Image (cartoon, rainbow, N blue to C red; front, side):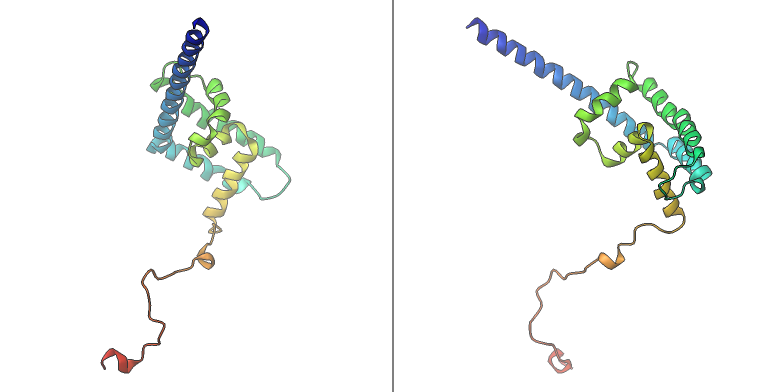
Length: 167
C-alpha cells in the first residue's frame, strides 16, 4: 500500500509541475503575441526590413553582408522582444524558453514559431527577407488560378430557357 501511495504522490507532483510549466509557457507565448502585435514592434521590424530587403537574393550563395544584417537584427529585434518579456515577466529567461520550444512546438501559432526561428535559424531569417522582398515587388503567392467556386444551391439538371422564366 505504501508503494501505491508513493507512486500516486509522485504522479500528482509530476502533474502539478507539468501544469505549472505549461502555464508558464502559455503565459510567455501570450506575452510574445502581445509584443509582436504592438505597433512599436511592427514599426521597428518593418523599418528594419525596409532598410535591408533589397540586399537579399534568392540564391544558394549567401552574401557576407547577410551575416552582419542577421547580427544587427538579433541585437535590435530579439533584444527588444527579450527586454519587453523581462519587463512583463520578471524571471523570464530567453535561453530556457527557446530550449522548451521543441517540447511545445505544436502549441504555438506558425507566426510566432516563424518569428522565433528568425532569432536562431539563419535560413529562416533569410526566408523571411526573401518573402518580404517578393511581397514588396508584387511577387507574392498568386492563388487565383487555384480558386474554384462551387454553388451550394441545388440546380436543376434541365436547361432553363428564356420562355420557361415567364417571359
